[in-house]
Length: 268
Image (cartoon, rainbow, N blue to C red):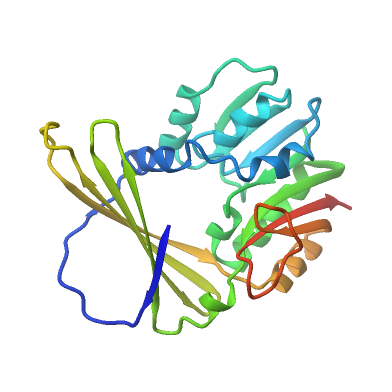
């Protein structure tokens, strides 16, 4: 992914249609289809006999991978479009998978789980400290005693903290078999503990496709708290951090450098 930083300035007027849930699911699946970098963190800590709950399961990517190891997985998400995609992609495995439409701040289960996972910065999407506290409190209610919470968080690095009025620009290009190109642009901004992501998708069909080009966009907001804040929130929720790692290589976390934090916490 290419990256650049630029000062605030007046850009030429461009018109982007709102990105629908259906189209976002398609782009998400395209981008994440071959992504497995986070899998070892979860595989090494989940036993085949465990009952696992994934919060924010999206298209079911991790559910499918973990069920293949024998674990029984329940995935929840608020997006019906994502859940439909997850169910369409379900395939026979040694473990069981099921999907439910549910809010992670209002869980409703009669049985407890051995492990709860919150992957790929999903908890950051709650943005407010109050909502995050609600979600973590719910996690504790559905975890067995000494059960574990496995999560991945976004932590702002020094480059993000120093942005000020500037924006961080990144882009990727995805090429389809029919020669269609999808150009994904991300504009990142940071202010007062919140990261703003404007994601733009420029779809440029191949000459023989007969389809018109599309320009679509949506904006996401993420809680961008420092490591110490997350540690305090987990402790307040009655969860004890056993291990923490920086990046997909699972090396020691380096404040100011790493933006990806993996945490292994236990119900105490």
